Amino acid sequence: MATSIASALHWWARRKPDQHAVVVADDAATYRELQDWSGRIARTLVDRGVEPGDRVGLMGVNSVEWVAAAWGVIKAGAVLVPLNSRLVAGELQKVLGDSGAEVVLAAEPYEETLRQVGELGHRHTRIGFEEIRGLRAGEREDFRIDRGPSDTVAILFTSGSTGLSKGVICTNRTLLDIVFENTLTDPGMRPGARTLLLLPLAFTPGLVYGLVMTGVLGGTLVAEREMNPSRAVQLIEKHRITVMFGVPLIFQALASAPEFAGADLSSLDCAIVGGAAVPVPLLEAYSAKDVVLRQIYGMTEVGGVATATWPEEAGDHPDKCGSGSIFTDIKVVRPDGTECEPGENGEILMRGPGVTPGYWNDPDNTARALRDGWLHGGDLGQRDEQGRLTFVDRLKDLIITGGINVSPFELEAVIAAIPGVKEVSVIAAKDERFGETPAAIVWGEGLDEATIIAECNRKMADYKVPRYVVVRDEPLPRLPSGKIAKPTVRTEYADIHSTHEKVR
Image (tube, rainbow, N blue to C red; front, side, top):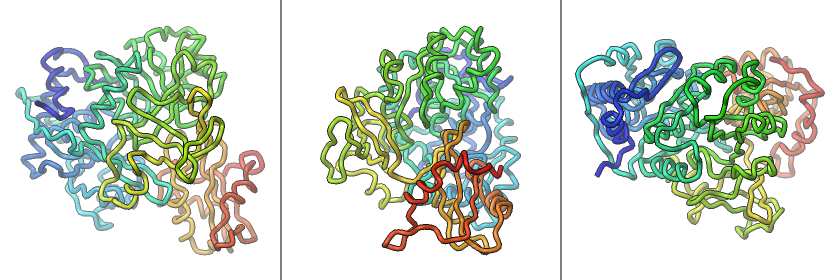
């Protein structure tokens, strides 16, 4: 019995070989073409010495080549490590080093960045997308190495509350269970689903719901390289999209496009939104088009979605995130582990078939997150009398900007190394476009905002760089333990979005 998600690609290549599996811009590949292409990539990797279980990085913007390469890595029996194409060399070195990836499939624009990674000490072999494209044509190739249900298929790196990124393990079993559960609860996620992806394939929604979900269901993945709201609205009509997901920023951009008012969105059966609070006017704008935006709560550790608002309740309970799923349970607990009463704040816990078995080579963080069968996500929430979940705040310090996690610890480490900086605390500032954005509160001597921003730009991806910088002339408040009193800092600068100008 086949136990690999790659067996689905083999099946659909026989059942409907001429249907488009993926469409990106003006390029597309059918299931037969994608099956053969990824098979050639897999065989090439094996011929190059890649063995089952080896980690292989993949770096590039959304493209048909990216999709073929991802399936090729999986069919080679290797472990896919999607790489955020916006990371700089130092950040990539950390991810590649933690995963142990010694082979990286990368598009041409990232050759220099990967060369710098090598200079920093992580030796690896780069296989360029020019070679991937060269494998597109050829004889039929059904090569694949199946691995067991508990074997790791992919490692998704996500920022953690205690510092730098952690590698979330995805197995054949967890990915297939996520597909199974979603087909029972989401009307748009059925065999033949047509998915519109306006996020990077390298992120959790792109890999789990775009690549895997759509591929296993024999659907068509329509992915864009960049956000163009008018074009996105047109794509929904053109391809009769049934599934779409993203942060409120994406849905708001589409609703603001001139084409939105007259667009036929009747094919859109599943519209999932999360990562930030969903404004009621946005819900109303889509409701007027007979599209229900379903608020979700989740994280990479559960495959993206742990619970979603029931369609019939979305309008009446816009601040709720549902009450779990068929096989996924959620509960809210006090620090002593006892369950909270309705309306009482506590930590959100989850358990279900899509929960990761742990973090890659990180037993300490795994033990902290997974306890007694429950995933402790580090978020604060409450449930009502009917069990519906409301997300309240993060117990951890993560900043979620435009749906992407940013670790304040990582940003603080970069700023603290700048000459003249004595203390720094990074907090979340409200932002109309991104939901929230980093703000750096700094105490030191001989400092200015431009110097701080320049150093952050040099060492970090642009979305991590603070948009607010405050240089104080006095120390930051501290707790009796000597630690910086971050809650006090948050309170003092709660209105920084209205009292200070953005520095970029």
